[in-house]
Length: 506
Image (cartoon, rainbow, N blue to C red; front, side, top):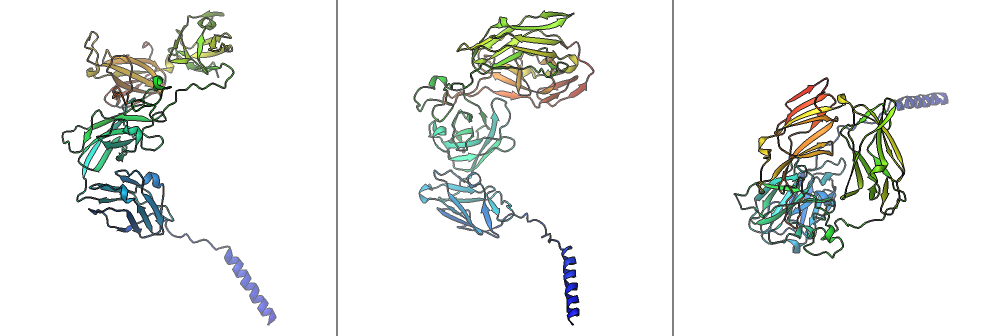
């Protein structure tokens, strides 16, 4: 009997051990991708003559909130944001009764804040509406935002509305009445507005406080107030720009009319450098002189860590010619606006090894400290390393050579290589041939030079000055070595021809 019991126990243990090796965790089925479903709102949605100070939303499952500060908004904006909380299957919103105005339509938008507890599926696009008056405001405004410097649509800013009775400094002092964000095309829309006039601005709001603080932030404004009842109003276009630092006001007390000192804008104080040595860099690749890296039309750019003065006689550029060093003339220029940068130009030859030599002390800072000596050896590019672009411009942008009409703006063509400005020129021909171009991505735009000073000018909020208009080309061009593109400014690329050489197009 004992032996039989012992044998049965061994069999049971063996079966359990064998079975354990085959045990697997159940798959649990498909992942839940269904967002929470709203069952009831208390009080009900779209009520009139109601001051909603406590809103409860009931859902079919446990819910949570995510990024409330960003996702949950109320329009018009209140001086104190609503309190939003979640518990089990409920979302509760509390609003101070004293903040609600009479005869006003309020919209509480939840964005993607409401999510289910376990999978984080967001319930998007829900907006709760109520009115403290006998009707719902239903008027609209819309327009586009552009980056003034590029002329291209902007999608990173906010558009804000203030009552038309506010002064121009309101955008730096308090939050707006209404806020909207542009879509992927730079188009913004306001819905449910009352029948009145507004001041309208766009802000690239770096610190998300819904006001303009200057510094790295960009601003746009309309020359006139906009009205929701004006059926003849043309499309609103806002052009974002960065204001110039106000050096004249840097050390004065701020006032309501001071441009950039109204808020914590750029502080134009000079910070003492901790560098004890005067150091510099030059835009030359010296890693391998067998690589053709420097363009024959390029300039040597010396960048210093402090303001400097240059002794041009202490800079030499030469190449070997039949075993003899040949030196070529240099042209050295500095810009008072960029005292840490020096430009050196020379007439260079194709596929030639050059040596650029700087003697000790060729540059000195304002304290009299001298730069060290330097030697750079490099090779220039040859014809096969370049590409060519033929650009056709619309005749409407052609400047007349003998025009004396001071009221007519000039048109300038700005050419950029990657993010660097290649050239800016007055348009005097409808065909522009660009030879000896480095392989890069090229972009083009036309500047409406209203004041005819040969450059693009930014705007000024308090001077009511709009930035000059920039018109971008329809697309950028990726240029490769030996390639030639013929393009129209207002149309896509019409031909791409790969050529064995572009000699003769210097």
